[in-house]
Image (cartoon, rainbow, N blue to C red; front, side):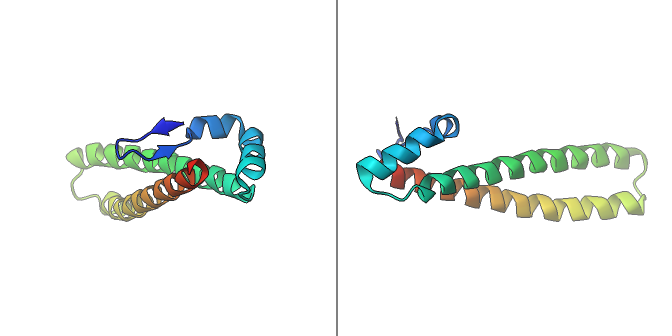
Length: 112
């Protein structure tokens, strides 16, 4: 368990990643919660981590485009790619935030 600054207690996500069966059993036997709650936490966490990975790749590409545009400011292809990537980055940032919030809510459900 971890205690957040707002005094809500949560279960460590890393512990859930490494011991999902134990958490499922504990939640079902001790608290009567459906085992699917643990599966939801794991799925949202995986989705968030995958989106973060993709986000890092997009940001790296944006950085390399910025470097290329320093020498070739009129490259239409690069300008279009940059615009598309900027939109994708914003969408992914929103997705990551949403998934992290979902994970946090579910963790609080598991700990309460």
